[in-house]
Image (cartoon, rainbow, N blue to C red):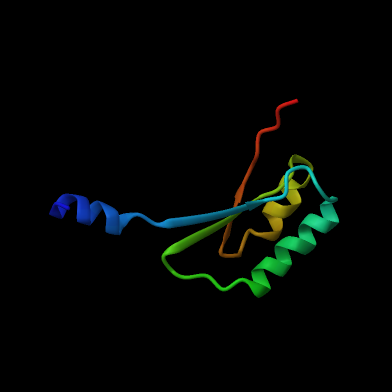
Length: 78
């Protein structure tokens, strides 16, 4: 491995994203997110995100606003 490849590799961050498709209500989604915030320990070199159902994006986004988790979205094909 060259020095350039070694440097590029060390600059990459890990990303862990969880989603639960279109399952659960808004209140269940909020409960899951607050539970994650309290029970998941993260490393400084790992980014964490949740991809909530469309119906819960806004409330989950508000709940995660001051947390270490990012908000993602999912597409839905019928």
